Image (cartoon, rainbow, N blue to C red; front, side, top):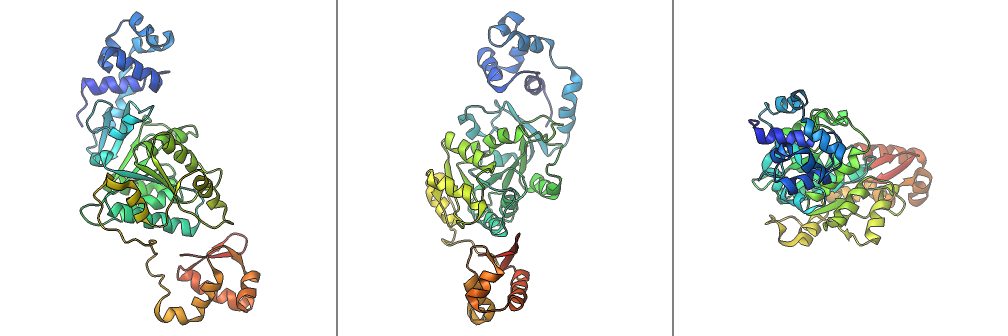
Length: 375
């Protein structure tokens, strides 16, 4: 992207100390453009914003503050889109506080694609991870861009699943981050960030160099929900930050979906709370596609729960002792003593069989000596 005077003015406005989004939008409404804002008299500026902010605007922005962004734009994969650009996500224009500009690394065409947010717990269960990946892949295959926040757990799983999509209608994925795009947070997701930058997109409203500040992540969430037609919560405790995204989605007039779970699992409490408040219960990707109606011309998605490849218990497997054990195990977490009483096996026998099932990806060992069947 070749920087021009207009972009420099947008950057300068976004970097003006003390100037918030609401005040910046008032200035743009009054004067028409960032260039006109910086050309306005101090008295005119004071009629719109506080005197100290007007004084900051009057000083202008030093070239050395613009330099990092302009240097970053020399990479052809990097862009900055402003409220005045056609590439700016049109869905964000319908939320109360759209950012003045977005830093984008990756595919600009995804910014205005029909999208769904998938969010959930950072401390996700193996079943939650599998659900997030499977739903994301099915929905991405159907043409929806999957948007999430690049966090550990459900977010990362949703991005991975969406990036596995196939076909020309692939929706891909966007990661909305709470730092500057010259930083990767969490660092463990560096490979995922690089894949998103090449196959999908990363976006941020925060200037380059912005570290991972706690206050920025709830603010980031309004963009995750705002760019999406709906928000799917896969797993969430009652304290999960993903419930903030769900609340913002409701305030923005978006649909909220939730996957139910075990009544005993802390990671399901948040989803159950959302369902009590009117969120739509979903069991399949098709449930979401049908609810969203004519939003996209979706390709056919099998109307079934997205299964995990390689875990079929049909045929001869259904007759073996491991399959019998799976039947006794159920889908709620259970300890060895309780499981032994159900199936009449010793702890040693159970341990050996559970180890085999765990290695096959059919059972997960949980903290506290509990085991849970993976769907």
